[in-house]
Image 1 (cartoon, rainbow, N blue to C red):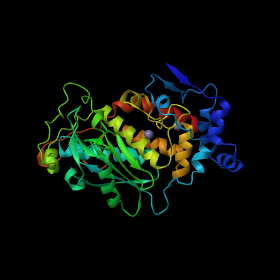
Image 2 (image 1 turned 45 degrees about the vertical axis):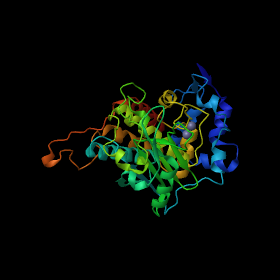
Image 3 (image 1 turned 30 degrees about the horizontal axis):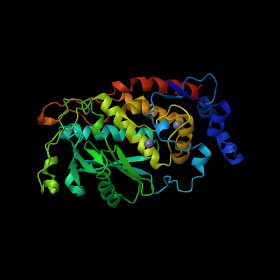
Image 4 (image 1 turned 135 degrees about the vertical axis):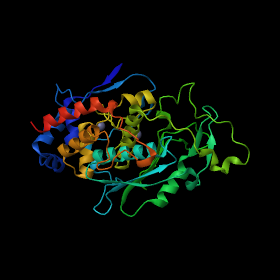
Length: 359
Ligand SMILES: [Zn+2]
Ligand SMILES: [Zn+2]
């Protein structure tokens, strides 16, 4: 295992920059916030570890990219930031996320709550879920994995048309696998940063996708049936688990991070690290490193303490539907606590960060 280590000077410059205007902007931050952000370059820090490389197929090795420090982010002329009249993130669910309507509805509410805490200060709004047929997208059966796939570019076009006036961005989420073009095997997601539109699939994050037990396989589509969306009726969705929720939250926040203009992080272990495969995505933490956190704070303008507290509240609130009982009248009792087990370690980490900011 290799470790990507940067000098104290490199990390400090990436965070604060040497541009006098940005240095003075940094000095105006709250002292506690600076104490936390400075952990990026403190020699004995333990809150923000280095990036580790485990194989040649890891992202940094296989996709050389220019790194992006705070100053490059700040001065990027193409970067989009929320404005006073465009401060909403819209989530459009395509197809079902769970195998019952109630699970699907709860799942999307958990994701909404998570995004609201993560992008603290913005409003997250849910659009009424739509079936695949509403998007008029092309679809196919994957030759290798035999699961249904929908065309990512067609979904982006559909979302772009639906993007509301007050939207900073609109993101589609689905449990159906995606493909970008005929010659490609699959894609986890696709986005247009200039349009503020993205589509992301969690299909491959279920515990069984790569196993022989996977039940999402279908036989080849009949000729002429490639326009019959009935194949999506009651189509397989993976079982909702804490790990599936964690991976979905991670993907969604990483991808929306790109829409804010954050590029792949090469500084420290960070949510914004690129990932080439599921094992690498799992290794990537849920948190932003200080350099990426400063970028996001600059774009949104949140208070770091309030944002961390909101994330802790989301993890602690297992129902996540304040005032709404999960007991559903005559349908019987539906007890569907938010599966947050996989987030517990992260909660402890946030509490440590809060202690540093509030010292
Ligand atoms: Zn990425
Ligand atoms: Zn980072």
